[in-house]
Image 1 (tube, rainbow, N blue to C red):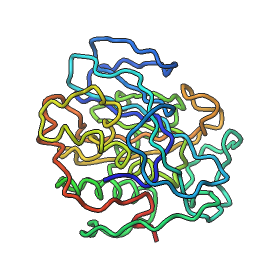
Image 2: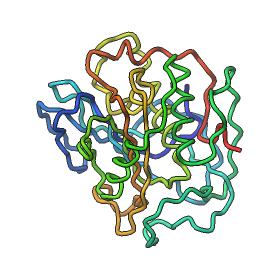
Image 3: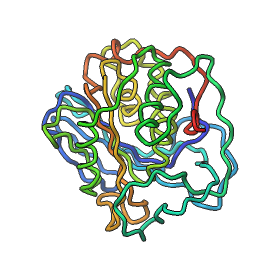
Image 4: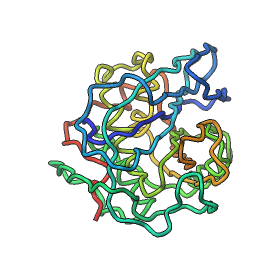
Length: 307
């Protein structure tokens, strides 16, 4: 399933088995090799997968999303800083919210769930041959679960549910306004994907267009392998956590940091999104059983299921 909307991105996820993860600074393109569980950062300014169809560009620059995949259960460092850039335009509904904070100027730290701002109308998303399970999403929590389960269904994986406990830990991490993995808050034991630069109203774009549509093609040659080639883990690690069969619960939190978001630079809108997962995915040696090949459902986009 290829994305028709992608996001200039650097994205973050986690490798499984909660070791004491080394926190790595997001600096330039150097890499260091260490023999502990790693956190990888992908920068949005290099070559990427084959270009997906682009939509009409907006007069508003596309938001930048930052993230890093994380893997557990492997004694070896599998990643390095690697430049890539999925090329598609970001489009969102044309409705103008009254309370959406502008980047780098808002003083509010509350989450905002209104429709996003843009001058470009969205293109219609294709209808899957098999309808998604559950009712249409009506808010942030529903969007998180709905868009995870759209993709899990395509990989023959059971639906996951929202967890208030995971939300509590995700919100605490997001409110730190420090862009970095933290899988120890409130006792840990969860997997994690993180991203930056996108308002809460666009949480479905992070899950569907960045993490799934933007990454699944990188895993195409790895299906059926207990231990896939980890060379490009930072390019597919969010995707594999989203569809990980053994994961049963999820919660995401998006927080606006009026004082700025550490580790991403001033050009990035200071929104920090943290998604926590129980049970964590990306366990070394368990990929074949937990990341089944897709059924081939039609591609869905961020706005699928929106009323």
